[in-house]
Length: 385
Ligand code: N2P
Image (tube, rainbow, N blue to C red; front, top):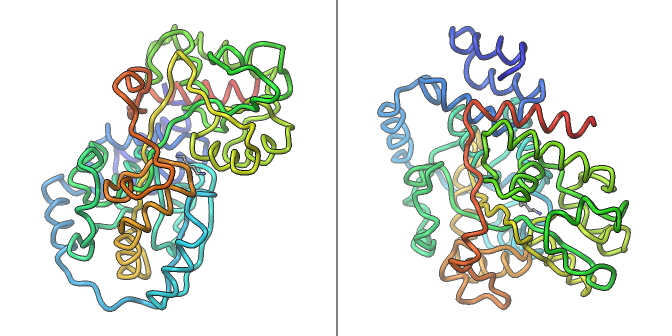
C-alpha cells in the first residue's frame, strides 16, 4: 500500500487539485519509483493529459501531421552512459551541420526526475519501457512524425507496436538486452545461480545493480518465482534473500561497475549484457552468465520530449540511427542487441535474439500497477538494512 504521503498525492490527483505531471514529480521526490508511478498513472483515469484516449489519439495524429520546419542547428541528447558508438554523434554532427550536446544518466529514475522537474532542453532521451509509460501518461513524450522516419522499415517486426506505446506513436526502438552476471573467469568459477551472491566465498568482491526491480527480481527468480511477482510471501522471501546477499556485496552499482571488474576489485557483478561485453574488450577474462533460475530481458527506446527545442533535428537523428550501418556500429560498440533487422545483418558481433529455450528463462518486466508500491517499500528496506 502507498504510504501516507503518497496516499495524499494520489488523492490530490484524483480530486484534480494537482495534475498528473505534478503528481509524478512529487511522487518521485518522496522516493516512489518510476515503475510505481507508471502503475498509479495507468490506474487513475483519465489517462495522460486529462484527455480521453480517443481525443488524445486525435491530438497526437494532428500534431504528427503538422509539418516540421527545416533542421535546426543544434541537438541536445540525454542518454544512459556508454550507450552509443564513439563515432555516432560526430558523424551525425558533421553530416547534418548540427552542434550536439550530450549528457548521460545511470537510471530511468534519474531521467524521469529531470524531465518531471521541468527540464525542457532535451531533444532525445532513452527510457526503458516502463519509464516511457510515465512520459506518455504525463504528456511529456512528443508525437513522432513517421513521414520523417524514412528508415522505419528497417525495424524488425518483433519490436513494432509494443504494448507500452501502441503504434510506436512516441518511440523508436533503440537497444535490447538481458540482466545477468558478469564475472572474472580468472578469479571465480562460472556463477550458475543467483545464490552465488549469498555465499561468503567471494564476499566483498561482488555487486548488484543499483536498481530495485533487478535486485528483487533476481531473488524472486532464485526461488523459482516470476520477477513480476505480487505475492506477499514470495516478496518477503526475496527481501530476506537480498539482505542476506547484501552483507557480501561491495555496493549496489550499475554501469560504472565496469571499471572495478576490469581492475579486479569486483569479481562478480549483476550487470546488463552489453556493458559486460564492453568491459571484456579491456579485460578478456570477463565473461557473462545467465543464472539457471532465469532473469530479465528488456528494451529501451528513443523518445523526443514534447518540449524538444529542436524537433526536426531530433527526427533526423532518429532516422539516422535507423540506417543499417549506423545501427550496426552502435550495437557493435554497446554490445547490446539491435532491434534493426538490416543492422543485425551487418554487425561484426551480432547479439542473436534469444532462442526459445533461453526465452523460457527470461521475462520482460511488466508494469505492476498499484502493487508496485510494495516493491518500493521493499527496496528501501533492503537498501537501509
Ligand atoms: C547503458 C545500459 C543501459 C541499459 N550502459 C539499461 N536499460
